[in-house]
Image 1 (cartoon, rainbow, N blue to C red):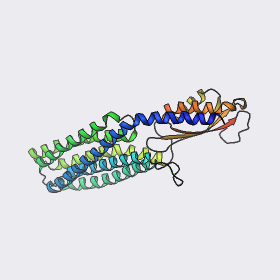
Image 2: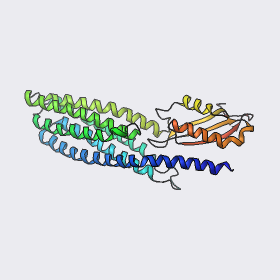
Image 3: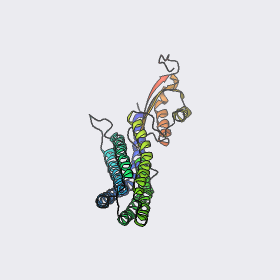
Image 4: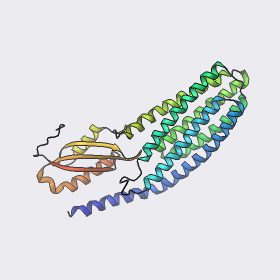
Length: 313
């Protein structure tokens, strides 16, 4: 038992150093998310009003797209807040999983809105209506500025967290979409080809669907306790087998606790003579797993001599 307090210490110091390093980043991200939400919400309102006044479907489509971004940003911010909330007797993991639920809902809402947009665009294509091209162009120009600025807010942290990367990608993509709408507005203003509005609207819908489809797939996978996409079980097992004292690994399960945290449970086959080293082996493995982006691990010892009667042995 004497090794136990030591292991706790080790974890504690590791955790503390980690949080120490995290603090400024979280504050910075907090601000980035809040600014992103405020600016994009304001822009959605502008786009909806302008879209209704000018009768431009591509503006309304883009507004729907930007609204989904606001929801995405708000959810990512909520996820950050919730991961800080401790666990309780009802939710022993805390509320980390809400981040997965949230990205799943986000994807479902997006797919539904794309359906509506496509339906509208096809009907409009059959019966084009006059649109004020200049207004469309000016409004979208504002959009490019807002989206580019928001993307820039996340650029520093985009490789540290799936949610942040998602926010960054979304915003960068939006700036490009807005550029498309600006060009639409200009073409309509000079040529009066109103059908182009429907075409651009459909293109935007396809762009959103491509991004959303992977979000839907990934979040559904995590929702079903699947192995996170970037995790490779063989690689993880090989890493565990490298540890001194580990003879074999059975019953390995890897799943996501949240969009940023992963967990693993496994049976470690060790020699009975190495039982006293089990704490040291665990520490070694935890350390190795941290580098593989797995922050929660539980190990159960099995002895090399024991008869394993599980089907996979």
